[in-house]
Amino acid sequence: MGENVAVIGTGYVGLVTGACFAEIGHKVICVDKDQLKIKRLAEAQIPIYEPGLQRMVAEQLEHGRLAFTCHLPKAVEASDIVYIAVGTPSLDNGEVDLSQVKEVVTQIAEAIERASSYRIVVIKSTVPVGTARRMEQMIREGAPSANFAVVANPEFLREGSALHDTFHMDRIVIGCSNTEAGERIGRLHEPFGAPVLYTDRESAELVKYASNAFLAAKISFINEMAHVCDKVGADIELVARGMGMDRRIGSHFLQAGIGYGGSCFPKDTKAQLRIAEDVDYDFKILRSVIEVNALQRERFVHTIERALGGSVKSKRVAVMGLTFKPNTDDLRDAPALDIISSLVDKGAEVRAYDPVALSKAAPLLPQARLVEDPYEALQGADAMIITTEWDTVKALDYTRVKGLLAHPIVIDGRNCFPVERMERLGFRYVSVGRPGSA
Ligand code: NAD
Image (cartoon, rainbow, N blue to C red; front, side):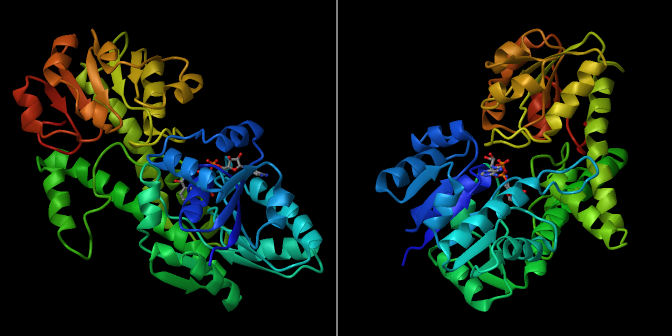
């Protein structure tokens, strides 16, 4: 039977969660404080780029299973289950900024107190260990007579394949102190058919950070191996393939490149480090993972300098891809942004192309010329630099690219092509951790 669910926060996670719950038959009301966003969403206009999401939202709006509002109390009143999916960005000191969560929890407490019937409040945002427990205290203080439970249900979707991930989840983690509430959240997800792991709330909160920290560690590890490959003349792709064939290791997250970015790995690794520090534990591996990832961007800039004769001063470079990975318009902590800033600081003239993120990138990159046509960016450039492995970049006509470039140099931070293919086309092809790449 369908549940009545409120989802607070309509960012990447909240909007996908709301649409997917509606798709499996629940009645969902999504809440955001951004009035313009809500007005547009109510007309099925999606503020983010996420394949398949626009159609799903439009269909669910039409079926009447999905609605949008700015009025949080009304949404909480109309729902038995209240999901929190607001942002939890990093503060400068690595700590998690919980202000959005706290603001919403205060409002939920007031609404629950008024409603006077049972509610399950679920924290889906990525939050430091202990947050669900503190939320329960906060709600209890604001709603002394209310009947409610607080459940931790972290999210594992990836931007760019969020719908697929939601319908093919590896696991659903439900952290609760109240078995009945936890089981009801389990039943809410039943149509997704994924295995459910029931835990205490602290463990659920940590599963999320531990998973992201571990994936980030795989990336930093393979990037370190790539530097060794460069020095000894081995090929990181073959090394990674050989490692990945071992089922204990697995082949995912072993692609050498310019490191991780995005809205999750950078902030979640820093937050996990901070969580450890707060209990007097020095999480040495994680400290190195973060440091290696930052260095990876700097090293790539040095690679570009070397490929251009030692300096990028007065050189024109064409940067392909701005987002932290393909199939999303998310620019948060994207390596390309740091790399472009550094190139500009060193005197390069940068033209940059991205298939979906140019308008979002414009205020962040006033020093670069942003162009919609990749060939325009490449015209007369001293080198082509690949920072995001978009299909539109991989599918360019490389004979034409060679004709447009002033010098046939491609510096590929994502190892998009076989080295031989690019060399056969007549490029000087510099990639990460492969022979001929240094
Ligand atoms: P986001 O910044 O894209 O969206 C947050 C939304 O919450 C915004 O639309 C904002 O307007 C809204 N909001 C903020 N305060 C509000 C309030 N008081 N009332 C109503 N709405 C409010 O964030 P996101 O990327 O969707 O991430 C949300 C959470 O999920 C974070 O904790 C993140 O770490 C976690 N997460 C994100 C991803 C991802 O790939 N983006 C994956 C897994 C987990």
